[in-house]
Image (cartoon, rainbow, N blue to C red; front, side):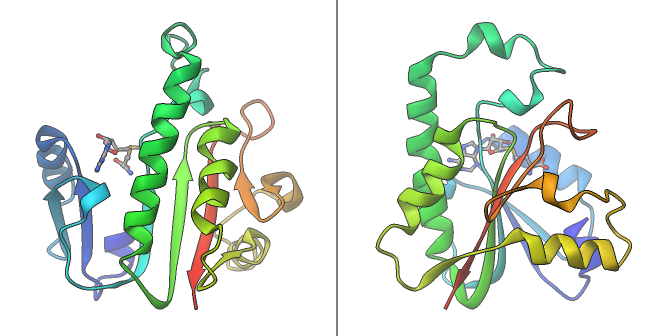
Length: 181
Ligand SMILES: C[S@@+](CC[C@H](N)C(=O)[O-])C[C@H]1O[C@@H](n2cnc3c(N)ncnc32)[C@H](O)[C@@H]1O
């Protein structure tokens, strides 16, 4: 979708597992999409990006309604393991963000450990990075007619975007937008 809406942009997608990378390549047949099988903690790019989406691996607790087995599988220590991977991926992605660029960090988790804590850890002491408020983005989406949900305030948790199953007609998602000065 990102590539289709921005045909002049080059879109690079990084996926750790080769079979998933192959599937991604198969599904996105656009000529401006380049799928790379690599570890996002060690990105293999020598250039910077204007926009980055870090849709990281997570516990998936926002999708419990569709995936109830997560409840039996997930252990408290898994959250810490996921958090350290998420911090590493976000740091690595931010290192590739161009000056003036924007990065969206997203999960389908409801857990503070995988959401706010990851963003706060990475931004701590990084004066060149600022957290953007999602309110403005949502208002723009509403004005352009791309978002029909009226209650913008219910989608916000401070500067973050957050959907809640049962409140919003979708899974639970979290997103933070980070800018590089
Ligand atoms: C939330 S999913 C992303 C879904 C993707 N945005 C889509 O629409 O298909 C997270 C993905 O990250 C991959 N992944 C896990 N660890 C990774 C790593 N270290 N580097 C790159 N990809 C990783 C997983 O295999 C999984 O496919």
